[in-house]
Image: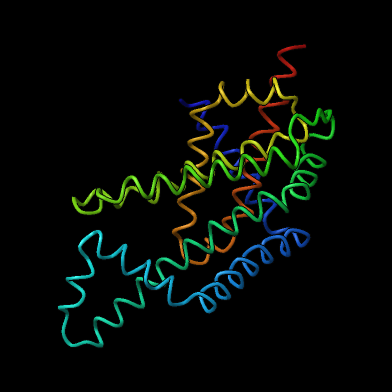
Length: 243
């Protein structure tokens, strides 16, 4: 356990160190901007269907009927607006994570590898198609976690769902991309299995960042950097052990 935590904290430290380099700042900003513009556009273009689905979801968990009885009505309207914002923000962050995974990883991997692991040979065990399929699978399971656990909100356990869902999405999404360029397919499978608990630990810790105001703006790129540092370090160890 101690060694696992040391490795996780080392990856977090390296990720934070790289995050504030000037060359990284644009990579921090543009996925968030694209995600915000995307959901604002979709929200304006499909405002009625989206509102209908949102109210149906509230009705399914029994919240809509309570909201209709709140007086004065301006309080109910304010609560409704806050709930919309609570939906909008996670959508933006999940979308930014996906954009970072699919379009920004090469630059982040190059930065981390050139600085810390220049000797690592690139075996190209993954690729663009694999990354896309992995992202779609991760997103599908992420959505399923939310849908399946909706009843938990009725009994007060629902508060843990965002953290579990974020941990799953982060570890599933970024472990593949962190290793795809440098590891072979066999090495990727070995590292996924050997360090399963550590991948989940990284997923949970980086997932928590998404719930911290201001710091969450950096969460997508920081998450990517942390997984890259952890993955490349474990790959270097594996090859050293194999001689």
